[in-house]
Image 1: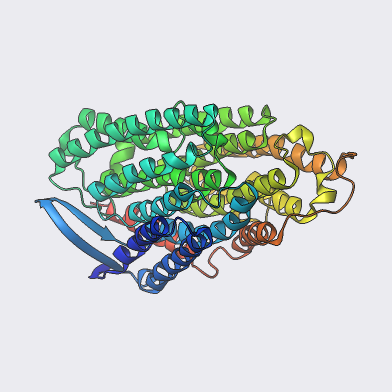
Image 2 (image 1 turned 180 degrees about the horizontal axis):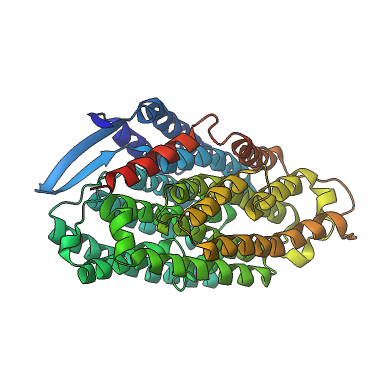
Length: 496
């Protein structure tokens, strides 16, 4: 594996930043703003996809823009782990941009310049996180993502949205401050911030110091990854529009937190050191508790988006659980779940948005018989929900299978039992929605009246993607190979 000089990572980031400027300049022409959004999304995806063949061959595009001081630089490198996050985010963003066209028209946000400009900046920050070559670069774009998402959370201007925005900033900026401290301590201990497979921190620093550092990272990234007890900002933020919820839950924000754990465990500490100092045990316990409690809370939610929000809280901790295992197979499962969960969860939020737009209803108790009115929407919802439960051959089953094998490989039977129990709890909050939609009659939904095509096509496409990658985990974009390469490099690099 080797890096080569390439400007492609910078182009992938700057495409969206340029689009944001063009959107602001075109603020009096809403259709042009939509065009800039979709055009930049397509170009971004094309640029990232063009780097995939070289990454699969072990040749990583990289560039250092400038150095602030020895060991601290703004640098990018597209490795296998970064490609998983960047490629999946950019692909889903293209589809979300199409969904946005009809959604903004129906809810009269087509002329709100903040909506489109903030979205494009968020995606620029997301790709900056994915392709960051060191902790300093990751931290810069991590904080940019927090700030750029805030206008989207409060965009409706309602009191509950303003409250949600304040809570969002309070949680995430506090977490960012902890990450700044952790990054400074890392540089002090190691004299570098550059990501290295297997990590660059040394046991000679002292287990007490390293454990404190690990806890700072766990809290710092755990807030954005909705790790309990730092999760409550996420359900509160469900007052935001559905495409924003999709951005929060599937494409960018929470996945940025999970990806932060990928970098810190695999490329700063290394799995061996992270495990030896006890940080792996701490993270696995916190993730396990999060999975159980969030699933139980989801069962009690009548508001559809809040039920989906608590589902996200639990499924993010599937990723953290896999990363906390001292097991390459567990890591493969965790990396795959970054992609698989994104496809399934964005489908569910698209469906929730289509239902709200068509019926103005957002409660599970209101959805009796809606499967007759909106069969394609609810069929996509059903497929994605079954995938999150872990039913084969949908992609959620594949990542859960590897997570289970990773738990067995680490001789942690209790974590395997936890995964099986969480699958039952997932069924407990998804199956009642499906039963009500298709098998509970209602006088409100008695005839076919499906959503517009610009809703149906995106949600059907993401649902079919979840099915396709369950049948072909290594199909089309080689996500399985990327996950395997990333896990292999991390564990091989940790052998000293």
